[in-house]
Length: 156
Image 1 (cartoon, one colour):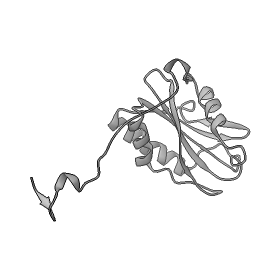
Image 2 (image 1 turned 180 degrees about the vertical axis):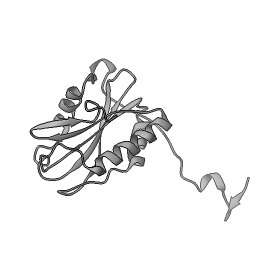
Image 3 (image 1 turned 45 degrees about the vertical axis):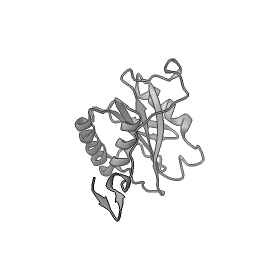
């Protein structure tokens, strides 16, 4: 075995471990059948004091039956935007062994229309999901007065 300064090479690299642990029984997980279901679940996890203040990006992780494995806070930004790193999104999806994801972010301005950046990011993550066999079911923009679903509008 090769060594570096007398230490075995296998001992000088980080160990990567993949696991998913939950305390929620599969029968107790909420199921997403529509964009409204997804929005309702997401709103329960949103900090109401931030929804009109700063932009946040979250994902719902779903199993093959459309049941929620978890919700992950991907990023928190400022008043006009946040950065959602596709690598972070897919790391979470892979760790949870998710079959599908739903993207979500809020618009503090109350404007429900997606920006050009929202469209580009959705396309980029959708393409990445295809490579990994992780379906991007929707991207939902949330405000205190409603939501916008990319899937409902035929954009996914």
